[in-house]
Image (cartoon, rainbow, N blue to C red; front, side, top):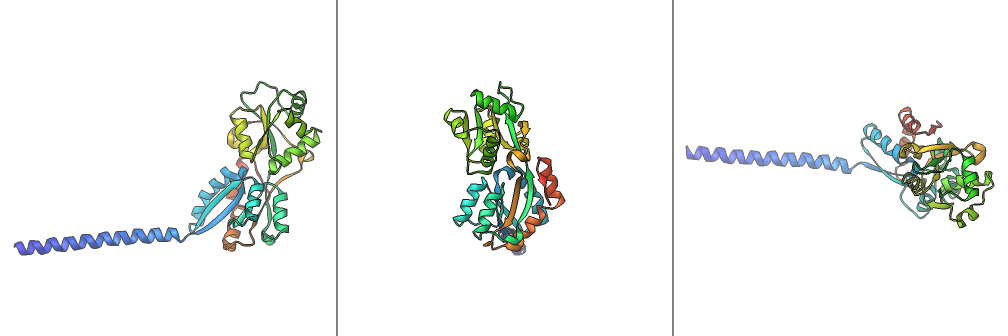
Length: 271
């Protein structure tokens, strides 16, 4: 009887070991499958942070074998990183200038280039500002009076370049305003947005999509004759090792489900 009991105990022990091993193998296979995902690196304008992260969740269900890695910053900074050899499969710029320069230098696959979205340049006012700023005309008057502090983008980032055009439209001398201490700067649109949201300035010029995401009050939006159209071009990089996968993602960004997310925050889908 003792012998039978011993045999049973040994058998149960062996079975438990085999079951554990099977479970570990299954878990390892699952982990291996996850590690075998194709990673797509997307460089995108900082103003697209919220929308692309939301779209990424949807895309993970459409393409479970794809892992999306985002790098959000000013388009000028992203362009420089690409020129310096950073790994990137898809680039989405907040202006044509950066994309044009990369295309001219052969960094992008021209056949894949599309105009993806249109945005608006918005004048936003801090909640704690005591100044009456309800339009770009008011902004001009206060800057000329020298009684406000305003945040804008650096000259090497698209939102800063659009701001320069608005200043030119109103015949405002940026250098003079800066010397008077009326301007503060951000290295990308998110930094300008943060200054307005935290109330460290009276107002700032950002995109209307960033205003929506940060729940900021939009006083006015610039017309085309003030700063031109704000077009976001997108293209697959010429040196991408995952060209077809990057094309598929770009196609998805033009589909209805993505367009709905873009439109929700104030973008105008163009395709």
